[in-house]
Length: 323
Ligand SMILES: NC(=O)c1ccc[n+]([C@@H]2O[C@H](COP(=O)([O-])OP(=O)(O)OC[C@H]3O[C@@H](n4cnc5c(N)ncnc54)[C@H](OP(=O)(O)O)[C@@H]3O)[C@@H](O)[C@H]2O)c1
Image (cartoon, rainbow, N blue to C red; front, side):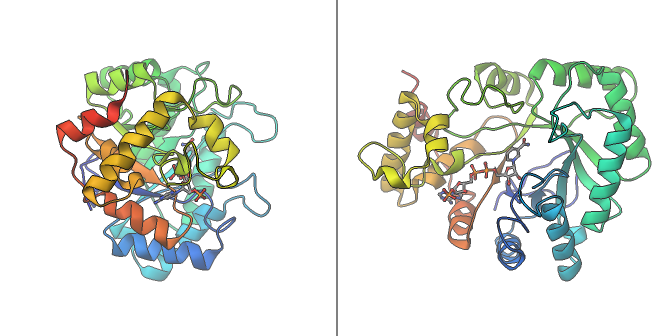
C-alpha cells in the first residue's frame, strides 16, 4: 500500500480509498464487512461514504454510514481509520439545493450518529451551489471544525475556479479551506455530456491543468472507470457482458486506445489492465488518492495490488494515446 499526507490527518491515509456507496444496501452487511476487513488487512485505512448513500435504493438511506459505524465499533478500529463522509447533497426528490447552514448541520449530526463517532476526519461538501457565497459556506464549516466535529474539509464536484475562490477567501480571513477535491477521474475520461442533467464533475483538460499548476490534492471517484478496464469491454468481446451505461460514458475512440495500451502493458508486466489503469493515476505529479468500488473480494484484491505497481515515465507516456 502507498500512503500520502493529507492535511496532516492521522493516520496518514492510504492512496487507495474504499468506496462504500452500496454497503449495507445493494451489498449486504456480511459482504460489506468482509470487504472492510480485507481492505484493512491489505493496508487500506481510508474510507469514502456520504450522508446520502444510498437513499435511491429501497432501505438504502444511511445504510453505508451505518455499516461503517457498526464495523468500526466491532473492530475497535476508529483511531486507525480515516473516515471521509459528505453532506449538503441536493434534495433527492426535488433536486433543490441544500447548501444551507441548517441542512449541513442536520446532515453532519446524522452522519456522526450513524458512524458512532464524535468526529469525522474529512468532511466533503457533496455538490456545489454557486449561488451561495464561498465565505458563508466556509463560515459554517469552520464552526463545526472549531467544535471538534470535523478535522479537515473537502469539496466534491466543485469547479476549479470556485475551489480557488474559496481557498483564497479562507487564507485571507483566517479560516480553514479545502484540502482536496473529489471528482470522477480514471485513465478513461468520460465522453462530454454523457449525463447532461447530473451535477457531478469529471476530469477534463481544465481540471487536470488546475491540479498540475497548483499541486492541489485529488481524491477521485470512479477511478476504475466503472470496470471499463476489467477485460469485459472492447470491440469483439461479448456485448452482453458490457454494461450500456459504461459504454455510453467511456466508449470513445481515445478510451479504446487507452484500453488497448493498458491491456498490452498489463501483459508485459504480468498484471491486470485494471491495475495498470489504477496505478497510472497514483503516479500523477500532484497528490492523488483513488476511490475504488469493488463488488467482491476478487475485485478488491486486484485493486489493492495496483498500489504496489510502479510505472515508468515511458510506460505512462505510452498510456496517453492523445493523438
Ligand atoms: N463524490 C461523488 O459524487 C461520488 C460519485 C460516485 C462515486 N463516489 C464514491 O466512489 C466510490 C466508487 O465509485 P464507483 O463505483 O463509480 O468506482 P469504480 O471502482 O470506478 O467502479 C466500480 C465498478 O467497477 C468494477 N470493478 C471494481 N473493481 C474492479 C476490478 N478490480 N477489476 C475490474 N473491475 C472492477 C465493478 O463493475 P462490475 O460490477 O460491472 O463488475 C464495480 O461495480 C463510491 O462507492 C463512492 O464512495 C463518489
